[in-house]
Image (cartoon, rainbow, N blue to C red):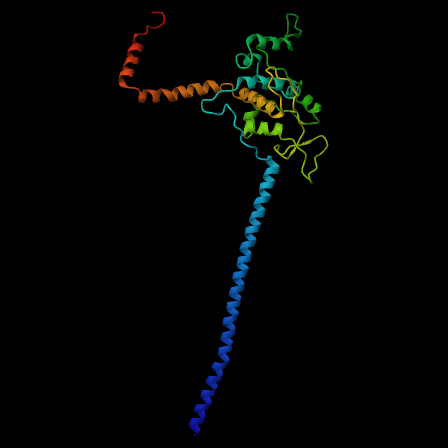
Length: 304
């Protein structure tokens, strides 16, 4: 009886311990599951927050980049951009007219001479007549004095200001850049210049522009000292083409593109000739090549 009582006490203690342990284990299991579920929720929320933060950060960076560098300009289909395409010389002539009548009062083109225009946009007589309309300070003469004379083909296009200080004084501190190489000096060159010239608009809500500046989203910072210069019928083209804002923008950019790269057409011709010779040589029958060699060998040299 004593042994049986002891055994019963032991069994009761063991059963009691198991009954106590089971709820504790169940509590820990449920607690762990709850923590795991909570951790998963927290992780999901953190990932979502990181994604939103990254998106907002990207948007902020894009907005900051746009504000710093200006709105990205479109790519326009310039007719001279093809591998073997040439300049539109009628457009270059109209563009020079736009430069003369609209741009030249502020912007110089110090690398361009009147003779450069011969055969590109004007005849030699026309270029001489244009050059003769300006007065050039030359000298000294035999008496050691400077004098003025009519311009000639070798003279550069006239400067609107005597120096940079005079240019800044006349433009409220801003310095109008020389346009000789402007389509090479700016990112996305001719597309940027066209977008800038035709991109003036009212500032969006919440954007204030300081007095004396003008809103243009394509200009870095959005505020530019140069006012909108191209307006419909600002010039009257000699060839009768309607002088719309877009047409004048296209023409003056064609002129500026030629000024920055006047050798483009010659280079394309040379490159195209070098490409075509191997192509022709590779596809021509051997009899044609032999005949060509025979004719070439029979041509006398100059002076013989």
